[in-house]
Amino acid sequence: MEDRLSEGTLGELRVRFLPNSSTWHSIKGLNASRRVVQPDHVDRPKIFTPQIVMASSSKTAAPPPAAKTVEVGPASDPKNKRTRTTEDEEAAQPSQATISPPKTAGNFDIYSANLPFLKEVYLPAGKTDPQYEALYATILTYQAKPDYTGRCYLPDTDSSTGRFVSACIADPMSDEEYDIEINAISAKAKLTFTAAERKGFGTPSPTTIGSGISAKLRPAEDHCGLASGSGVFKLTPVWQKHTSSGEVQELYEGYISFNVKYSSLYSRKGFGSGDKFACSFWAVHARKDKDGKEIGLH
Image 1 (cartoon, rainbow, N blue to C red):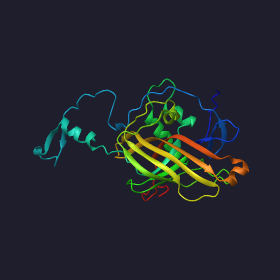
Image 2: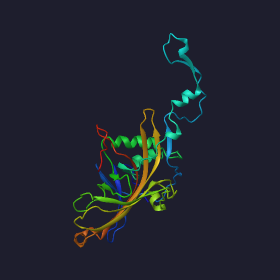
Image 3: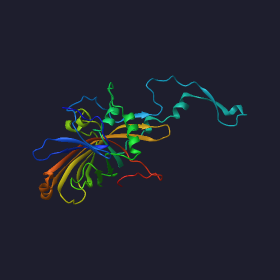
Image 4: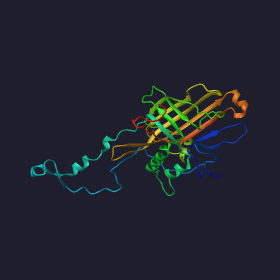
């Protein structure tokens, strides 16, 4: 099949099933809409999650720092001088024990894994491992515009509900976004993906990544023309970095599917019996305003 994902905008993988028609995939975003065909299979290396990078890390071990004489009091007093040891140098660096666990709560901006300009950063030609840090930096450039495929809010506890919205999961007549509720949120020590869910990233394996959350979806409110809707939502951290300034950077992978059944009115107008939406995605925490509050759905 011809792969026509040569360019695109921030969009969602939208799969529609209409009477007497074939399945098609489309990128729908802020700038353009185009018909695309996704390759059936592309090999992709296994992922270990989360990858954690410290600002001071390097690929090769550095020799221990030489002892230094430092001032610890008035320089005029020789008693106020001591030798800085290797332990002093190590104490100044963040330790593995102080790494905070990824926060799978709050507001997130979501980016479709079907976007070619992100996929080529994620796994460039000739590379065997996902380039998470480069992907994270690229996503931030789009987030700053601001631009995204969708947004979601996840509560701190599994007793509450979250929200999800995307311009690509919308009323086919009015293009109004469906307000989707995230419910039955469950924390998983080992989050499992099906082969079909992983295929959006280029390969059906691995099916088990690591810790994460799994949830169900349903319409948050009644909507004209929508008889019913249901789906699944999954999210897992795959990369984390602590910068020298103390900032924590985190990248997530996930999957969403949402199946809708239209009312008889929409069926008579030619929209078929319903739609099936499916998307593998990357996610980052939402931007913050000048007061440090997340900019999102909640």
